[in-house]
Image (cartoon, rainbow, N blue to C red; front, side, top):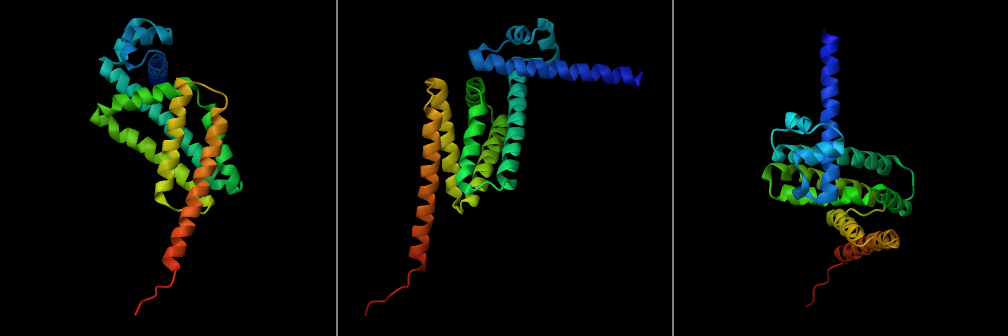
Length: 212
């Protein structure tokens, strides 16, 4: 009997996740405003009653879809963090790994990501979870920058802002050369921070002379 109950619970979890993934699909195609129980059930290929069974309101459905997407994003970021932290790849090639990671992210995923960020901005209970995602992204960037000898804390924030900006442009006006531009921009930013830290170090180490 316990085995039967376990199977039922597993099917329930699978059906619930199917609906959450379908909600993200609807968000990417129609925005948050396009999310309805019926639209999500249709995207999942299940009866409309399934959505209302698992989620008693649209706010509940959307919030859980946002959390599910953020959990998936955190897992992806952990994988990238492992690559950056454990790799023997020279610092100059770490940016290539960032570009490959960025290349694999579909435009639909990016649209859903920013839709959810905007949704969370109006839902205080979700803002902390967005902050966790952004902080995790900064930590990956900081790990990559340390390999290049850059310890300035503001550098990782600049890297993340640059990537997010390119991501928005990529979904608004897709163009093949955007990844090339992002690659060059990340290299330029890294070089700029190396030069800045060197200049600041030189100033701080310079002997102080007192005029008579």
